[in-house]
Length: 153
Image (cartoon, rainbow, N blue to C red; front, side, top):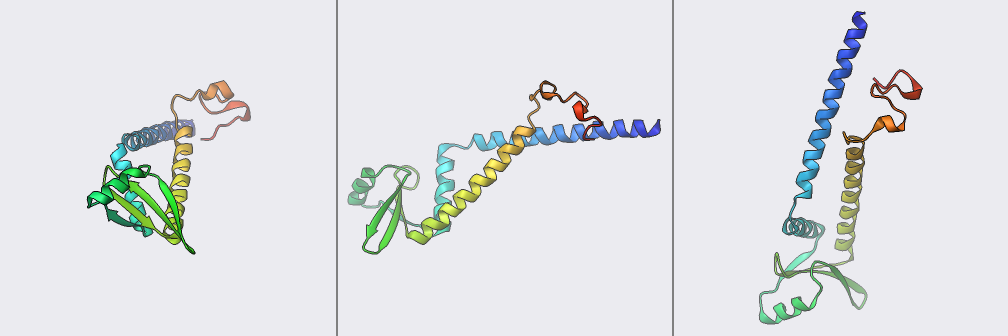
């Protein structure tokens, strides 16, 4: 009988831990979702600089005019002989043009892929922690016994 009480207490403690963890994940996800467009652009530009892109300010009237001709916050490629340059324009936050070579662009894209994978893994973990998910609808009972018996904890 004592084992049953200990087991029930352990289950309750685990449920509280999982619920608390789910709430913490949901709160952190909501903070990320609240990041402003300005903050997202700044984060991207910090990553560009870390990858080796160089910021060129639009500090003359001629540069201002040229910067306004480019699509904002997007990459463009420009070939110069055997070399490929990548440019990223930001007329709003830094009022500049980021310029990088193939190596800088490759480093930036590697970072983006790694970040996307991390975000996807976090999103997957968040989905399984969703307290509103109806497990009973899928054959798992409230005690997690389900058709397999015993339960997970």
